[in-house]
Image 1 (cartoon, one colour):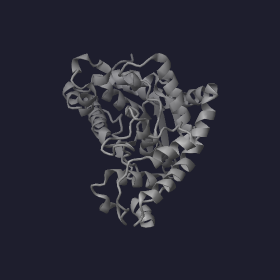
Image 2 (image 1 turned 180 degrees about the vertical axis):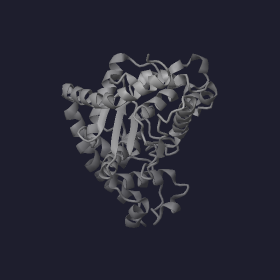
Image 3 (image 1 turned 90 degrees about the horizontal axis):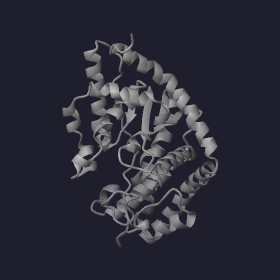
Image 4 (image 1 turned 60 degrees about the vertical axis):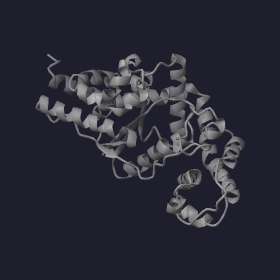
Amino acid sequence: MRVVSGIKPTGNLHLGNYLGAVKQWVAMQDDIQASGGETMYFIADLHGLTEWIAPDQLRDNTVEMTATLVAAGIDPARSILFNQARVPAHSELSWLLNNVARVGWLNRMTQFKDKAGKNREGASVGLYDYPVLMAADVLLYNATHVPVGEDQKQHLELARDIATKFNNDYATELFTLPEPLVSAAAPRIMSLRDASAKMSKSNPSEQSLVKLVDSDETIADKFRKAKTDPDLLPATITELEGRAEARNLVTIFAALADRTADDVLGEFAGKGFGQFKPVLADLAVARLAPIRDEMLRLLADRSAIDAILRDGAEKAAALATPMLRRTQEAMGLLV
């Protein structure tokens, strides 16, 4: 079992990024390796180019993302951790797969429609074509499983379609068809000011999200001021139907404490948010402060982060280069 997953270097990571993705990666690293499998995680800096970003900002975001992953528990000695751009085979295989993928398949990708909005003609070709690069990211390593959220399932299906067509077109069994790995523990974290919207750094209100670099005082303050309702907490999560803000805070508590939402509510049933929020604030500080402190320590030594990425890229390239060569041979490119 080989799990491969990537994350765009967006910078200013927040609690939603951590609980929804990074924390799940750490759990996968432990669980999958315990069963004899392998985990590979990469910073998707090539995907970061699909919308314009200043070069210095992209470099800084890549460094920050690496520091965050390591601080959160991704161990470079156990998982292969690297950034895409250091392994040119990602780009090379993507071009080869572009000649297998069909325009009709890409036209059905809903993510492009969502991200391009009304300005589709002004969007970059990279934004349109990045699902093929995503396919290359996983097929390059013969990934058996890929962690996916709801918005990425369609892209994994595309990767499987491309792999199937390639294998059929070139009469080979070169590419493994990756299976989705859906974590039931991955929560959807919403804004602390409006639980109808996801927690996002694009929200103009600083009170809407908890950043991983926030101080202890700031974290606690944001949870104390989080929007709630005047009703008492029930005994089960199903009884929170229609109470989006309350449900969001209980979801965050459960995810931080590695407990179920019903277990948390069993403890606080009949109590108000005046009792619940201070406990949640203390829990969040206890869980996030060590990650923040280690991340800041790592960021103070960029040479150490560079060494981590360089070592990870060497390991990734050792797996990618033979696979790229076999693809080239199958397509008649090596004479």
